[in-house]
Amino acid sequence: PEERNAFVICNLNYQVENGGFLQYFDNGYYCGIPFVKYVLEELDTPESKEAMHLLDSANELWLCTKGLYTKGFELLTEDYFKVNDALIDQVEAYLSKSNQ
Image 1 (cartoon, rainbow, N blue to C red):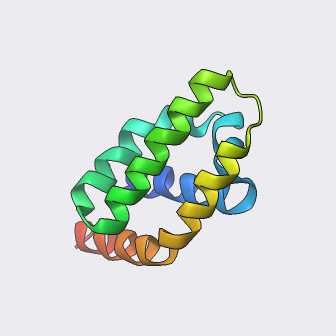
Image 2 (tube, rainbow, N blue to C red; image 1 turned 45 degrees about the vertical axis):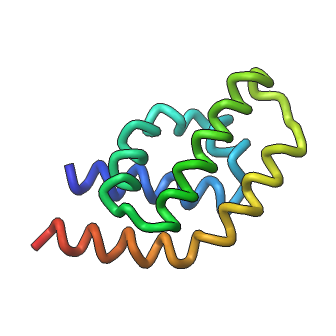
């Protein structure tokens, strides 16, 4: 499970950092959302809660637009960037702790 948790969080971060939430969904990584949400819930920090809210909003937008570009994806991505550094530090600490 630790490897899977690391994998899905890294995919979220990599995809959103490089092409936004639209890229994350476009490339099919949304199938890992339940595992991403598990890790974010385990963290239980303001940043993880915000990331989960953004992920849920992006997922809803993806379903509503059937994957077509909208400005909403850009806005959600910009908000993700605001919590990303702290979130990644928290995820690293969480994964290190779970590997001990």
